[in-house]
Image (cartoon, rainbow, N blue to C red; front, side):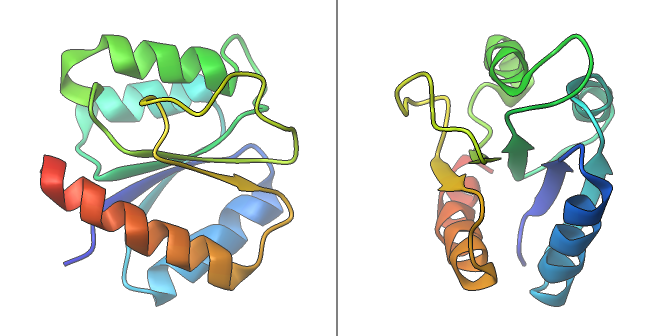
Length: 124
């Protein structure tokens, strides 16, 4: 069984498209429009992977969201795939499992999630 994915993306069209792709590939998904909503979901529910846009509205950007979930015991090892049109401003560290630069192909996205699923299974 594929892990449950928390998709954190502020652009509605992108969010809905990625959700549809993930569901067609057999992933169960939950959506968040911003980091605050995603943190609330993480406090109540269990996920195997987070797909995170770095540029988000509100108080938290994607980097602050990453620091916040790494500081929480329950989500410290949660695999995170960052998707962003902006280049990484910090090196790819243990905070991230993978990075996809927008625009990316649907095939690249699914291959990435399949790779990360292995990591998610190891931490489950």
